[in-house]
Amino acid sequence: MSDTHYDVIVIGGGIGGVSIGYELAQDRRVCVLEQEPVLAFHTTGRSAALFLETYGNAAIRALTTSSRQFLLDPPEDFRGQLVSPRSLLQFAGPGRGEKLESLFDQVRAHTPDARIVSPDEARSLFPLLRSDRIDLAMYEPGSKEVDVHALHQGYVRGLRRRGGSVRTDSAVVALRRRGDRWDVQSVDGVVRQAPVVVDAAGAWADSVADLAGAARSGLEPLRRTVFMVSMPDGVDGSILPTLSDIDESFYIKPEGHQMLCSPADETPMPPGDAKPDELEIARALDAILETTYLTTRHVRSSWAGLRSFVPDRTPVVGFDPRVDGFFWCAGQGGYGIQTCAALARVGAALVRDAEVPTDVVDRGLDIADLAPGRDAAAPPVRVQ
Image 1 (cartoon, rainbow, N blue to C red):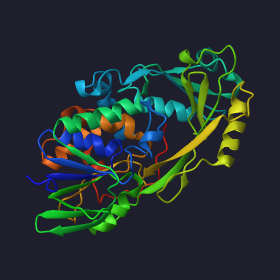
Image 2: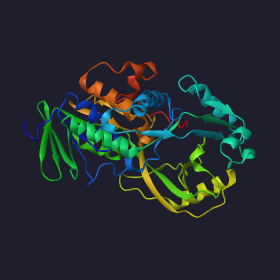
Image 3: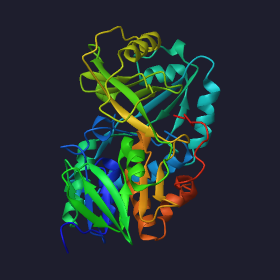
Image 4: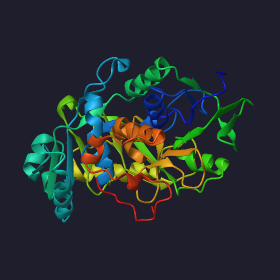
């Protein structure tokens, strides 16, 4: 077969693209096209890298819990450990305890180790926390920190071992449906053909849909700022949980001798190379200093990434209802790392017109919630 003829062409080399490419390469000839000179340059490479089973709406939690076993015991292509312990402590500020209790009621069935803790116990878990600034907290001891590079590279390695190919510097500039195949033209002028195109282009997914003549999904890229501050002297960050405000005014994740912090901002932006928002950093520092005993205002470094959502904040995965052979794998938002293992299996099953993995369905995923063309205009579900 020609080097330009494939069964599936995946557009996008972030975690969404390489994971579904890996799953499909088991019985399909797959090519992944990435517009940047390197893979995972945008959202994937800038992730806070956490596995949180209590994060997101019901569909996200089903995909996350279904990804746990893969992350804990990955195939040999992934060469070692992908996750390490990093518990999560979510707190509710004054007057917000009912929201946290409601979340606990939603997640307790599939995350049985999660438990409600008092303000004093919360401070014992995270000694920098001011117990008088919170109503209630929820502790999730089983959450994890993910080695995003190892996860992404494992998928790339496995994809190639299964015969798939990856092309960087290959932005797609034209898509044309000819009979039962797509002509996929990249910026270098090369035209590749396949009956199925998978749109896994992250923040650019709707732009790819424009090229294919598909209706846009309503995807909106949202900037997320991240910054680093020093760990206070005498504090052992290795045993601290990630600390997160249920109302998402900030979160803190210990990283060695530093603390990764974020204002959890969501500022609409066009697709591109996102830059940190200094005003959001200042706002987050105010909230952090009010809620904890941290005193520093010195930011050691900062960066930003784009988290792309449709309005109902659930991924769009499946064949487009009006454009033959055009398959969506977009809208993972901030959940791509923790859901990729299950979402790739679900997506690959849908491409093959095969049965969706029962373990994911048994955890509560309704495939209709992922369907392209669904009514995704519901207000955002910002449950964390």
